Image (cartoon, rainbow, N blue to C red):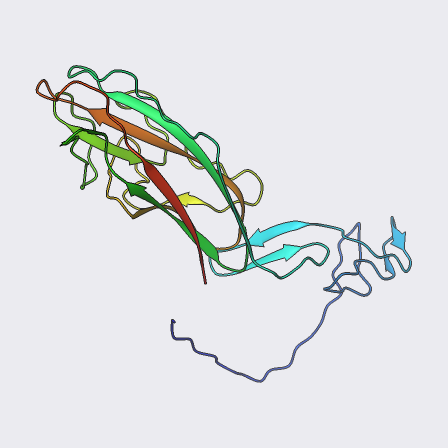
Length: 230
């Protein structure tokens, strides 16, 4: 738990009526009611109540959700949109790529992390070498890696996190650089630093093999783990 400091000061506060040339709030409120005697030369609402605006306003250190009251129970939702990533045939002269997508949404005051765990492509006892350091594609040597952004090399593949409406998800360090791939089982590959709407992520997979890589069928089982942060 991080340390915090509260500084208290005493001062005189002056309240001004929120207004412009076209609109005026005589009585402004924060709560489930919206308008009480709000009027200007061009508009008047007497004893009206409702949501003038809904949505999220945020900065690096603060956020507020506007609209009617909702439950304060935390919710974390997760869906795998693409269950299988098929690489086809491997070639020592051509990199192979594949993609898979998943989506996360969380309604809490905090955020979440996404981890990827599992084995690299394996055929019997032979395992294609995972990229434990973020690296670019190198044809002719064994490599297995992923990232969570749009790439142009070795081909155009993948996409940056799609935050849609009110999403704050992002690719995690080591997996957030275009054309750079890595795979360490259990690594955090994506995260949201605060309460977030729906974010859709695209996992881009890269495989390179060499001329001595044994032929046969390779499989890799991956598990995505999403954990809320508090």
